[in-house]
Image (tube, rainbow, N blue to C red; front, top):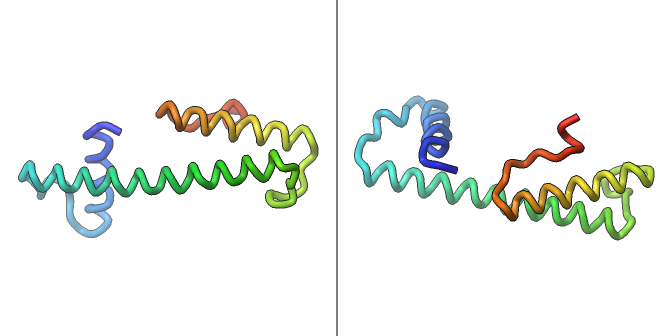
Length: 102
């Protein structure tokens, strides 16, 4: 994410608490806020990626009961979508898959 995206996320959090990013004008303060937001987002992405890996591993082991009863085609489609999502995550791309675009 670039600084503009990070600032938008920061502003949303600050507005939810009754403030706004425009009230924080010192460069050092802004950089510290951005660093904290990047860290929070990185943690969230790592958690999401770990859940994707766990779901993929379960599907590949042939244990679809973890995600409900799936027919073979649905299981294959889910495996493909998870592999695509993890590949895009590794490349830093947005998280949309052919399965979710329909």
